[in-house]
Amino acid sequence: MSATASEPIWTRPEPGTRKPRFSRSQIAAAALAIADSEGFEAVSIRRVAAELGAGTMTLYRYISAKADLITLMDDAIMGESLIPAGELPADWREAVAAVARATRTALLRHPWAVPALQGRGGAGQDGAFGPNGIRHFEQSLAAVAAAPLDTTAKLDLLTIVDDYVFGHVLRVAEQQASSDARTAADGAAIARYIEGLLADGSYPHISALADDPAAGSMGDPAELDRRFERGLAALLDGAVRG
Image (tube, rainbow, N blue to C red; front, side, top):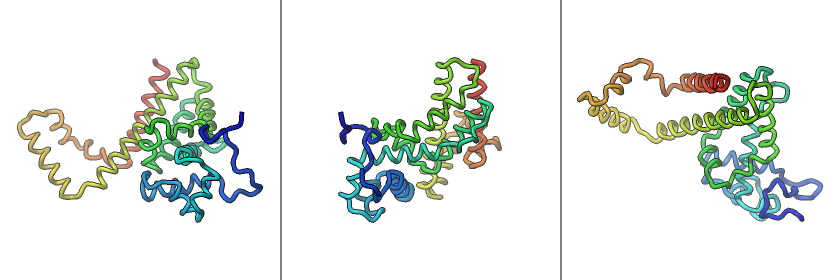
């Protein structure tokens, strides 16, 4: 049975001309550029076609629906998450950490990606089965190959690390969006509001934290990096102890 437009894009051949005008990677790159500069909601087949200097109907020779476009974007980000060939550390802990760091870096480069691509009821989920998605999974399996764990525990570890990376990136993106939207006056008003809540001693632990110098660095980018590394190390420690 031949592939149809209702099947995942990966099961359908690219246009059969000898020299296609656009590649799937070019289409994905244009879509990513729009999402990065204007937001994910600005991405459409018409908008991507304009970015490529093509007519909308021309792009339909390469993709059949916006879901295909989202899938290509997802797979392109998976490609950015790959560690270059030959550079995966031999030690399994370092290898898993390297994959996690590479994934985090790629997702932070596109802070809209986790909420937009991971929670759309499957619209971008075929990206996991694309060429880069398969390479990423293969690389992840290679990372845990030497770990002293059975297959179930290895797969559990990869899932937990992915959940940790996605959660971290989502939190950073939310903090950045909140910071970008908040004016200095907003910040001052919130500070006064919190001071009022703490004044009667009803929140002793928050009051103690407010006086702790360590709390002042929570939003510092360098501290975000350190916190990510501490959490990742704790996960890997727990994997071998558990």
